[in-house]
Image (tube, rainbow, N blue to C red):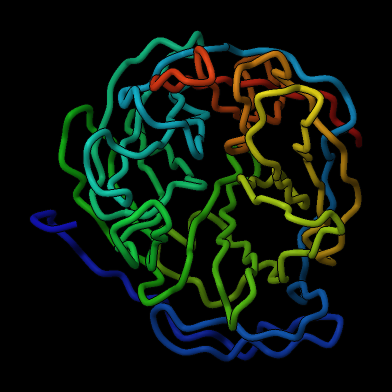
Length: 333
């Protein structure tokens, strides 16, 4: 991101105290952007993550809003996240009329009204992002330093910056030198999950959010490879965490509801094992419906929700793209 004030924060050397179960290797990578190693099996930190309630992903979904236009009208929504303290919603997408790695973050009301936006250049694809409330401010966590300038480009580091409507991000960088890196935040348990390519396979690592802010990625609470799903041609579209569970969203865009192949999967982060996988037909009447992102939010009344994002069009040939959010709210103790 040229011309942005930048402070590079290096990850601390990984501690040998971080041992993993199920035959995984000891985390021994050194320096910023170094890869955490492990076997192809499941892996979890020695202390693990305390078991927590999880969403029943088989339950129907409710609407938050449909067919809302973001700041960039010609590009589909990607990842999104909530500021659970200041009650804000942020959605990322590609910028109109620039190279494919330039992104835009839109701030929306919970009814889908556009409240502000911020451009982040040479960032990546925007599959997922996190939000960290700091007083009345919202700090965005997302990928940066893309490995190319097309829509296929992906971030090589994590960026943290304050969201300022119309502003230029003053970025701190973490885990530089990574490959295909993104993150998501858990607003209830105050954790962050990082997803990145480690040795040719995607891995998830979970950290206390406070340690991530301090640049300490030395001792993940859990570290495990992304499970291989049985369906052929699975298109990964987003992820988030709540407590001890990771949720993923996959599926392609479809013009016909009969072709829907979008699935939500729940994974136990202490074992890396898939616990449940269910098709979702949320928004099945949308035109050219495509799954795009997951996020967790807890309402002011204390209801915890798993949000699912979907992109759509006004018609199959129309150039405008719209954002749609749905949620599941049944927790199993």
